[in-house]
Image (tube, rainbow, N blue to C red; front, side, top):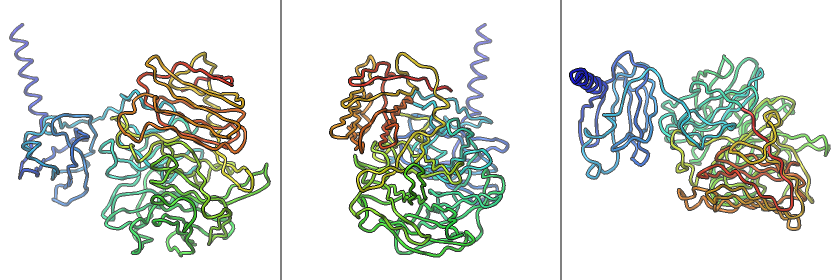
Amino acid sequence: MKKTILMLMVLAMTLAAQAQLKPTVLGDKHAMLKMKKGEKYLLLPVQESEEIAAIAVLNGHNDMVQRLNVKLAVDRVDYYVPYELKGAALLDIEFHGDRRQKGAVGEFVCWKEMKYSNTFDTTNRERFRPAYHHTPLYGWMNDPNGMFYKDGVWHLYYQYNPYGSQWENMTWGHSTSRDLIHWEAQPLAIEADWLGSIFSGSCVTNGDEVVAFYTSAGHHQTQSMATSKDGGRTFKKYSGNPILSTSDIPDFRDPKAFWNEDIKAWNLILAAGQEMRIYSSKDLKKWKYESSFGKEYGNHNGVWECPDLFEIKDETLNIKKWVLICNINPGGPFGGSATQYFVGDFDGKKFTCESMPKVTKWLDYGKDHYATVSFYNAPENRRVVLAWMSNWQYANQVPTKQFRSANSIPRDLGLFKAGEETYVSVVPSKEMLAVRGQKLKKPTETCEIVVDMKNQTEIVLSNAKGEQLVMTYDAAKQTFSMDRTKSGDISFSEAFPCTTDAPTYGQIKQLRIFIDRCSIEAFDADGKMAMTNLVFPSEPYNTIKVKGGKATIYDIKD
């Protein structure tokens, strides 16, 4: 028996020794690592508190084929990310940070923990991962990109870091859905090249082709194009990239293209510092500058980003308006990032805002709603949008590891009037009704709560730990607020605990609240108010108290 145990121990030690990769240390911040042929993945151990390690990937001819920035583990492993080798022969790794404090490079724990594998386990290990919101399988996600609908499939691309759960290595991730609720992860769609990382952009359908426009973020930000012949699953970059560039501003990004039937041509809008620039084209390749919008209009306390421009027709009001979406960071009503918008007219060349310049309109009055853009070619002339459900003030620090960030539930936009102004209405997309399940007696971590409101209503969600989220409606003041200062874990950022307030533009008769583990989304059922906030309770809220109203709780079906 002892002999058998000894043999097993020797075998285990031998396998461990074989598994351990041995670097060639070339200096106190420099090492090289040869790759074994025939392996599919190299699992990279990440330590988020560490500095970036810059990795140059070389093939068998010593040609550099890729650059990665990864926080390789020095003394502990937070999680692993897979790197698909695809012919990689050598990793040339340069560490940053003070090595006198970290010790010798050759002793870093990453060398002991790196391993080859033919698979990568994407099983959910996070208690805060939403159940019915889109999230990446692993890694970091921010802005939704390139969203379109074609042949019964909704396509969602997104800013993605496959090599860590914090912002870095921007590529376009890709997911698809047939119902806007359940998403299937697809392979990476567009990866960085020597023009730069792949920042935000859009897609259009042009016959059988899908055409993507995105920002190449290198030494300068330029606009590039790629085409897909297989419905948006793989893309070939245009040989004439970049298709748009400028020398007068560093923040020049996030192209949103669309077909304009009124002028029988394509339009494109992009962010340029503190304004939006509008272009037109007949062939999607050559773009003519038409005009700029933004000086003195709305909020300018941050950089303008992620624009969108579209027409909304409201049959009830018998009006149609053009809406210009402008995401801004910082400058949101409660700090950090948020989505503002402008209502007016557009003639294919110039957008004219109908409000006074100083009027600011917010699409959502929560703290965690940003980078809102719409799906191209949505059916039934719907204007369906998704947002990134986080805030740049703390997005890198929220208490998850395997992944970071989710998208909002899908929302349909419309119009409503209040006084002399026209506003954009926001309601949960009809697909959310399809997943409404049976009635429940108590809230769960994944549910919808419908509250019939009175003039003064207070809604308190709480758990046995004494954590609570408080929502208050005041009909006289026409305000709605959400207080998350005691909602659970608020320790990761001083900017997280807050109360968010929204105007209601009249009476709220019914409130719809969507809970999904780490998020609360509240909507006036008529669309005049939306509020999105993250929460991180130590256990789910399982108690609700309503003063001045009646709540009905529904399960959300898988």
